[in-house]
Image (cartoon, rainbow, N blue to C red):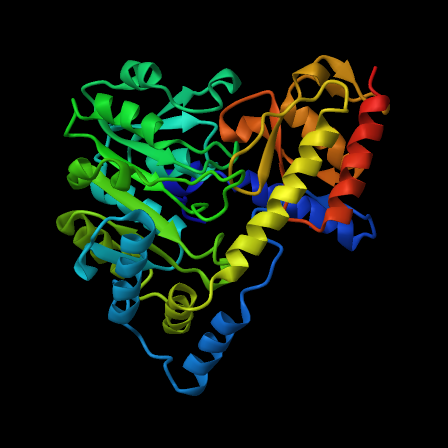
Length: 400
């Protein structure tokens, strides 16, 4: 058999998907696993959005659209950004793709040359470093400690910048930590980046609509519109609009870079689904009362998790201001053994033991670039969350 490329063999399977696959296999074998590893809302796509997708099919809106997206959806996205983020983009400054993930990759392929450095604050979404490397770049991981609320500080940013820096990836609300940057915190980072107009700011705003305690997640470009020529804002419909399986994302930014991203997407994936785009128009134009209800439910679940985690010896968690995750510090368990004799040397061992012994699936902090933590999702019915936390507490009581 001929060899695979170095690029192909360097790609690491998604750790979250691997854990979910193992949990699913245990479920098939009859084990009642609590899937705290999930990365999508447990709610369903709103009915009006589903109906728009069905109507697209029955009315034969099933052909290719323009490769960079359907013009009416571009106009709807421009209106959304103006309303939500107070920034005006022309439709031609917007590109639509088959999910935000591929748009992030296409963005990096567009702006990064081999050897360029890309600053990736940790904890980070697991895919960022892989995408940087696929683009030929070098991910520069900057650890953002729990004491800073898992947020990048101007001092850390300045220390990470070099003459080879081409971009920074900025994620707020942050997966996995739930950190949400304020306008003042963004402006403080911007003050450093203004000294480097050659550095791109690639933002991931997927969890924009899932925030708690009255927090809002201002976008970088809305906070610093004077820097718009170096900002690529990536967003999508998966999380806030509960449309994970529809695979629909978008980016807005300077015309030249957006056109290049569109050209790359045309070669990589072709046009996005016409059906998903029709549903996306309705998601933006239709009733969005469900968002507030979803936020309320997620906040109720978050509060339960924080209360219960605070009662489990060896665990601790700061209050996430957004997303549907809680990033739990398990330093108090490291160096101990489970009741079955498993040595807990790092957070990967903790997660493995929780899955095999407590039948709870979580994701280790190591894959997010910051240990010792594990991430749990609150995208589960509250009774399931309680059951899972009961199991974690029982597991903790057996540590020695």
